[in-house]
Length: 254
View 1 (cartoon, helix red, strand yellow):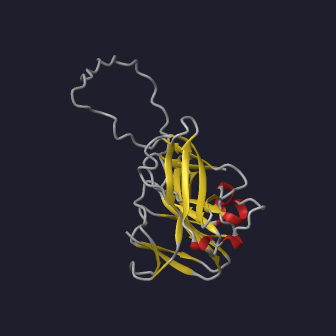
View 2 (cartoon, rainbow, N blue to C red; view 1 turned 90 degrees about the vertical axis):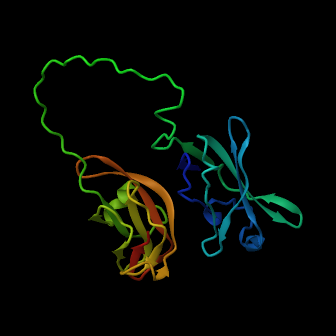
């Protein structure tokens, strides 16, 4: 199993389903994990040095899933890491077996804060640019189309490019302090927001402000979708924790 996250990022949250991803020869249901502290560790596969050691996880007893939210310190170095889960019992620490090894790959971030100027460095003197030979004016290429968000329901806990057509697309230049209407029908609620937008801090059931009931949503991954002019846009995928039937107005708080 592979999980990807950007350098110095805290999202997406790592999620492992004990029933789907756990080994069949380990009785998770009767192991009383709800009364135990579950730990997450990850080790550099090249240096064998732990980047994370005994980070505390959250157990969702309804979906039988383990969640771990990374800190910026956890993701400060790029690389590939192998992961472990464990919990304490009266007999000591027990490793949670999963069907396949879980690897976390930390990718370079989109921006490099160390780029540009360092005190005491040698200044770069630009060279003169030769005058180019005149060429025919090319036909203008259309730029990126108007941005927007995808939202709606889908009956699977994960979504791919082939499933995006099920969702509704709405042109927007931002999402915080606004809402989307997710209609009736059984499925998980999905909201896909461009990474270039300000991201919501939480989701609440409301049409006029951040004052309604909290809608449990999790940033589960990212996906790249080409707009109508062929430009690739990266979206954060937000998904409700649970599948449900009813209609919900989801306010995206600043």
